[in-house]
Image 1 (cartoon, rainbow, N blue to C red):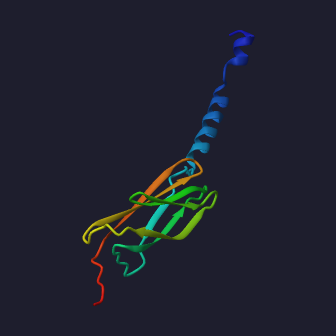
Image 2: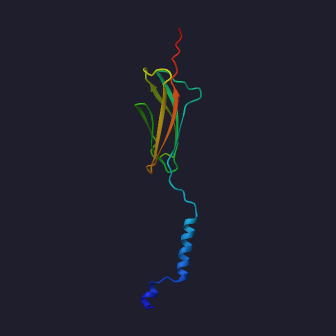
Length: 135
């Protein structure tokens, strides 16, 4: 073996040391970015009529920071200020139009995006009840 070959060849001890270092570096559990968590809740006893205002509680969190959180009902979208926050808890008030018949299922959709660009959605549904007007 020439002098140049000896300089570029790895000794068994060098190769074993490199392998041990790689094994130790990869053995620990690493946290990987995941999508944000998002939950929609209706306050206890919530019913909705047409017309009405629906109150929704939105909870979102992400350890790396939220970018945007929005809540949608049909064509209406409410965007909440969440930039760089790790947690958001907000009350959202959604207007229920007058032309929705009783028995219609309304689905609220919340979307959260984090600063890494990962997204998550949550949905919650509620039936429109008849508007009981007093005589």
